[in-house]
Amino acid sequence: MATPVLRWCCPGRRWVFAGIGGVSRHGRGVPTGSTSSGKRGQSSVAQQPLITAQKPRKGEREWAAVVGLEIHAQIASNSKLFSGSQVDFAAPPNSLVSFFDASLPGTLPVLNRRCVEAAVMTGLALDCHINRRSLFDRKHYFYADLPAGYQITQQRLPIAVNGSLVYSVCVGKRRSQMVTKTAGVKQIQLEQDSGKSLHDSLRSQTLIDLNRAGVGLLEVVLEPDMSCGEEAAAAIRELQLILQALGTSQANMAEGQLRVDANISVHNPGEPLGVRTEVKNLNSARFLAKAIDYEIQRQINELENGGKILNETRSFDYKLGCTVPMRDKEGKQDYRFMPEPNLPPLLLYDSESLPTGTDPQQVINIDQLREQLPELPRVTREKLVQQYGMLPEHSFALLNEVGLLEFFQNVIKETRAEPKKVTSWVLNTFLGFLKQQNLAVSESPVTPSALAELDLLDRKAISSSAAKQVFQELWRSKGKTPAQIVAEKKLELMQDAEALEQLCRSTLEAHPQVVTDVKKGNPRAINKLIGLVRRATLGRADPTVIKEVLERQLSL
Image (cartoon, rainbow, N blue to C red; front, side, top):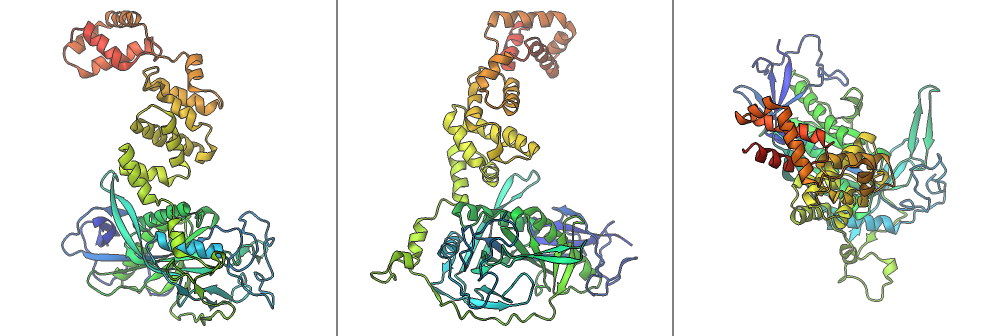
């Protein structure tokens, strides 16, 4: 029986199920050695590769995938959402827990102004409607790291609704074309984070750390407008950049400051949407893309093999590269939502509705926050393309690495080199060295000023190969300038035209066969002569000048 594979047709939109060797699979049979009872944990699926840009053949069945995201972003605030406890990722366990965080009797919540401002600014940046009146609710469920037995959230009337997130994905054979897409933002709500449960399997015990309990979260709910892992990952990266530009969240996924839940379903085009599964707590854009693509494949294989998709919660095992069941959601959990009795409605104002004589410190003015919005990543990228003539994908690369744009702009300020050459140096050479050493931009031993001095190359003071040697030495020898390295290593270009003429003449005399090849029209032969002359000059001669001299002496 043919092994099932998936073809990904019309990137980001259609999935096609087929058998290897052109045998289409429409029957309800089950492959040998697999089961498909529809019970949890008994999937017949193994992870399969994606083959892109193939059109479905006649008789093959098309599938459409639908992906929605729920993002929890930790608000960049010095204190928690409803208490004065500090927020510090690296603090010792249970060292930042107030009486309210521990849910001791008699404690009351006090809303953090900074968290409300962060929610409003995020909503404005995502073109949301900001509700002038929003409400807080209690969401009840029991877990050891939730001391109160409920979470304060905004279920009924959130702070912002009906926005959009514009992002771009790479398409084309070389992944060099950028296509703009939009995902709707259903709502943004404020809520508390829970504590952490640390499971110790060796001692068969669970440890509770409440430092995170009560930290302010922005929950951003994206509409199911995506159709593959790549689109979801691109949307998350764009949201990260927006949050970081606003300063509303550091959005560091490695530290749990941005966590994503993905809702995924598949269906045949033109038919109702399928049963969805939720993949919880994805903490990197790369794992998000892998988890979604795997889950799409799993669901299609399950349905083609006669199985049933369960409405369940799954997690992604990054070591195995697959999703695994956590709990089913067939019997919907009753969270017993109720209004939060200790918090009045949250009222926001604009300049027109602001009551006369109101203390500005006691209210939040939406228009005032709108004026404070910084330049958003999309606008920054457009300016880079227009100002420096760089490719759109280069503008994305500069913004995607923390601190890289600022580094690039500082180099531009201090150099006379062309912006395109600076872009090449920063994105190819500089960023390549950073990734090799696993360093952040802030940890680089090469400063913008030092890199700016490599305009020696533009001034014809050194050759391109010498410039690379200078950069390598700059990386190793902190404190030296490019000019000092050039002088120490004697890398400056030969300025003695007469000496270069003599070297070229000697090279031609020493290699008569190569000269003959050149005269016969062999294009590679002249390059060999250039290489020989450069070796004789220890790389200190400009290849272009060498070629001109050789061609003149050969009378080409």
